[in-house]
Image (tube, rainbow, N blue to C red; front, side, top):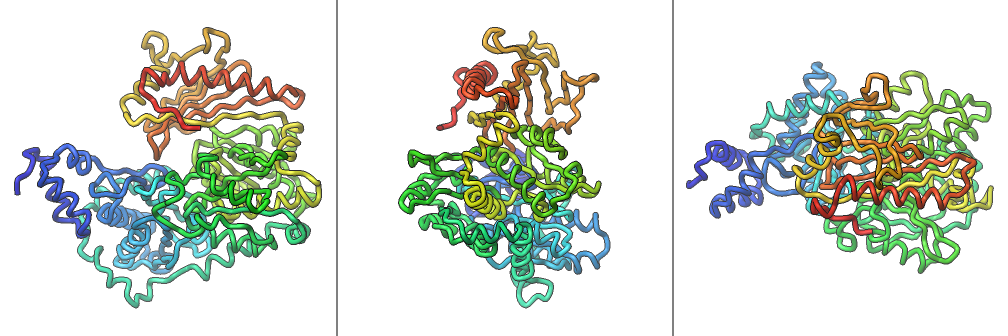
Length: 609
């Protein structure tokens, strides 16, 4: 066979041909060899996919840099060996085992089955769901069944070409260091697939293989019901509010339907075109409710046609929740993740007070990621509970919740602006199913008890705790060296000198008070100039705090070719000119994007609003 002449590449080609037993991906590599497409082969085979957001996520195609059967088997082998190192007693493998779930994407079921085969061949008890499940069911199952770990095969809201491998640890939270580095190293030490890893017969009549659905799912809804006082359940049954729901071609419909029934809510109106799992995502190529109106167009049409006041939308694996409510003029207000976070934060405290009227809230805790609104902090200062901030991502918030629980705290709520919400600690991850149930119950409570809409309640929250106005968006950059160059310029602002950052925008009109760089660990606001939050050199993240109260964070995405920006203007309760605060923020954000990211100069693509 004629090969490239590059020893490294030729070695990787031979490995792929020898190891891959999947006809379609094996053919992709062979076709590229015949076409002498060495550049593509080098990109696909000489670069390896690595653990990112608590696992893997990439395009489905042949290559060690992508999601495919061979890479999934290699990952499962590495994960299995790592778990065996951490839990060396075989009784734990066969007794506690591991749980696998999957969504409706192409290959999700197959990837979960191949993973199950690897673990069965290593004498593990394997809990494999035999139907699509919402992502929150996997971390819940780990705690319910006392499993050693769990995996959800999903790419969440990514395009249809992608898939992923989301790993949870024994504590029911997504993996964080040192587990991610340990698993990655273990994968690299176990790359050659065992012949048995492709053998489907391991799943035939195997007593070590079981479907956890009936053991796990009913208790999940029982706990959801127990979180609500009887008065709320009664109000749910009486309330005339109408809800429209979309599963966004994902797996959420059956679960949210059960949630509504279990907590006495009247059935919602389903967006039928998006009700069933469909890996093609035919009506929404970007199945991300966070994108706003573009992805919720069908939901709005359905709601209008049925005179439905509130829209609830899950992303395809049902761990996120988007919310919209009808305005007086008949249009729909889409709430931002920060606004829903404010509402559910208020609701979580209200629920706790209903359940325990004489409670000491000083022992209660709420959590938000550092790029999310500081509204919970303002609430905490006034109400007396504790607020904690973490790095971006629920892997940090879930593990922080566990740490606080172990310290005797009551964790009421956690959220991130990317429409991720954790009401209580039933699931130590974002959960779009329980969030939908709680949001609908809160809406009924507000309507029946207080004669308020969600919009009116949000305004009331801002009147009480101060107006918090936010902007979250992004620019697209598909060239990593350009991203590196942009952020390096920001941290060597003064003629290339290290740890020098911009001091103002708009020719000095708005001055910067301090800078925190969680890529390098620099923080100008601390005595020793060192950040208190964990740092990571593998991702870019810089926060600028301005003298007028604006806080803006610039960061790269862990899963998409985006440079994001998150800005918030935090007003005091006595600052009532909200329009002025918003206009100032918008002016400043536009200047920050232009001056710091330089979209035209760097060929960046703006988000389509």
